[in-house]
Length: 225
Image (tube, rainbow, N blue to C red; front, side, top):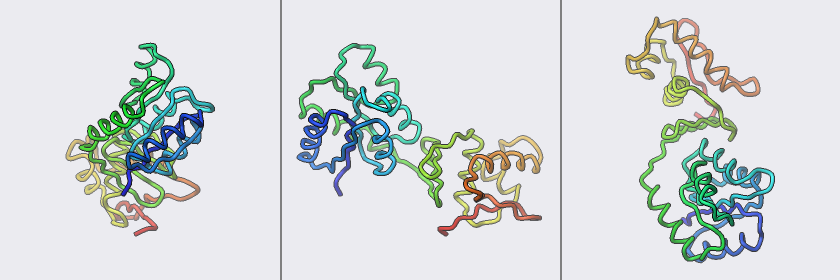
């Protein structure tokens, strides 16, 4: 299967030029011409690599990079016409894996892309997905309907436990043992407040996947079981 590269570049000439060279190197290459379209395409395509221009309309490359980095570990190479060292630092600090200054040699860009892909090949992503909820256990990121959700570490651990035991009734004691490995301080009922906060964060459109089973515990109900 071809590897997919997403090229986020507002200059059509440069975008098409980069696309051609990546296709010649055996990639499937897609183009987005502004930051908002780039984010949408990244979420839809889940590309193997993103080539990201620093200066973009609607949402600039730095903000696109920071947003993507909160959601995934997709390798990102940033392009810019700026040669200042500070701009390079900003790009790398935002989460980019590498940085190429325009004008650049296409062969060098492909070589850098292959090098970045080799470096990240060993990163194994553990992603749990049920319905519209996706939890990346490697990065600790959570999305619902493709939108990022901010959860605490304890909430992420709880959600992981529920998603690993779909449609299974879990007692409070089981939840504590599976989630906190004896590191939870408090009575069994104290877990209720933790679950209540998590339920508020993941409820969408009146749907609540974590349901109370009275007299027994809780169950993570999914429609795709």
